[in-house]
Length: 110
Length: 110
DNA sequence: TATAGTTGGTTACGAAAAGTAATTATTAAT
DNA sequence: ATTAATAATTACTTTTCGTAACCAACTATA
Image (tube, rainbow over the protein chains, first blue to last red):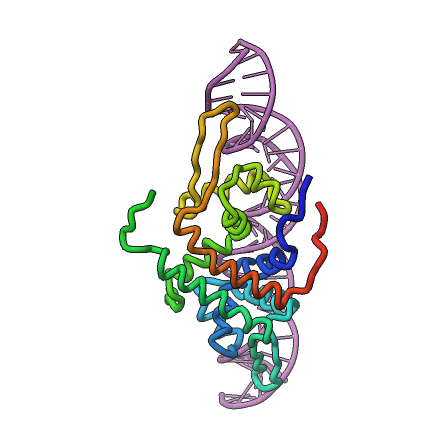
């Protein structure tokens, strides 16, 4: 039998942020408004299919805003909402941790 | 060939932390040393198979420490290493964000 | 008219990962 | 060898991901 030992909000937050690619997409958009192809080029190996899917997910969650400019060819801009921008400190902490602990210079484990 | 436009350490850090269940397991272990069954009971719906797999991954990454006590029955304790403990601020920020921006949602029962 | 180029996708399908449930391994005392 | 209480693995199904090809809308050019 299970108990709700974790805060449901926290659990939902983790669910959103830790979905594959979602974090990197948000991190990339923290640099500013970008078009589909810019995000695609910036991220290491995400495919168009997944990028499209995740942007839709994140728009649904109110984290990403999508604006269509009916020019030729069509221009579509993605940016973060306030809710998305508010994630900046999370990524700042992940950055700090990564600098300190990932691929460190021969730190003796154990 | 692809360009490394993201800091490789950050990318690796994201990879570790955002792997499914990994975040919640670490968050749970931040509360203190726990046994397999305790973690299993605390997390909403992770299966034994995945918990075992993730704990091994995290041990491999130097984030989780596994100690075997040859008693009867055998007792195995999981705890965070310094590297794992250092993730506390990350989760603190996710907690803050979740409190501020995630509306309370009822957890779907199993 | 047609055809090529540009952006932002979608579709189809095989591969990989996760979910489920049953089974096995690890312990020391009996 | 048997027992009891975890911890971990195996076998199998379902879901998600990765790759590559294709589509829609638009227009500049031939």
